[in-house]
Picture 1 (tube, helix red, strand yellow):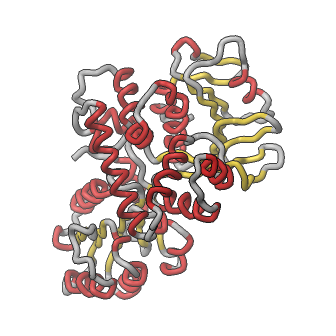
Picture 2 (picture 1 turned 30 degrees about the horizontal axis):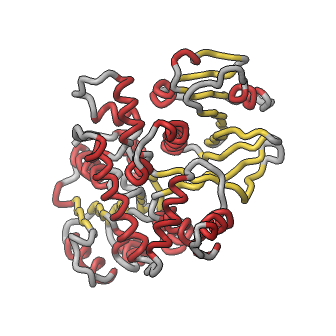
Length: 399
């Protein structure tokens, strides 16, 4: 097992606090491994092994008919007579009504509760209703580049070669743990994607027009990092003789979000200092999802870099928006409490154009501004704008 210490650091302040700790992210992003790390941390702190109760609730681990009441009863039996216990409940969204069971345990048992799941409803306002605000959400993502390097500590490849591999193969831990060629790597990612789609979306939401759903998903993935709307998707599909309502497309987008296949990125008006409700973009939970479904070619590189930078900003706890500055667009405006940074992303700065730097120069404040590139020759500082290589941006301790 390779450690991901950032997650234990995120969990540590809440150990033994009367809060449910919710870890949620796309399937196979490493949530179960984080639970193994948490178990090790609890043992290191002197907790007796029989006071740590781990339960997995995947389809393979439990009868399909298990109820929340049965789950509650089983856990109460497992804790009986032991005093203070730690409950680590993996993939809990498979149990209908789990929220009520967990709330009862929180209120009536001497226990510290941790849950994981692959559905963003675990991190939504609905949960606040059930748990009356007594929970903390910790989002889990696929590997950052820094974590990828840790996983590849024994590799003979240079850091530059590993960055190229990371851009092409993405950050699913199962890929990083072994040496796969492109075909095998994308085959594994394809399997993850189809598991999410078939189990978490098609089956859960009883989608009958599966071919139509798959066509909509393909459009969304092809257009990751571009602005589009449910209306524009509907219009495009009509031109291909596929009739789908705008309402259905909104549902598909919401379900893809809930399954952590995509993340929305809203537009932020820098002049009016307000979030705009139109023309948002979407980014993938991992760049490898796009290649696995559509194949890899270098024309995708700009979009892949944008996706990687977006996820890195999210990992570090930033709220991320597309910036609108009058008629100019800023790739990312990222805010965290009273911090803010502006980021433009391009494979290389266009010769004879200052668009990337110029767009940032027009923002009249003193927050840090970056252009992230893959071209070593572009790196430097221009009019106060820091032009940095993607590798250095991803590995920087702070920005």
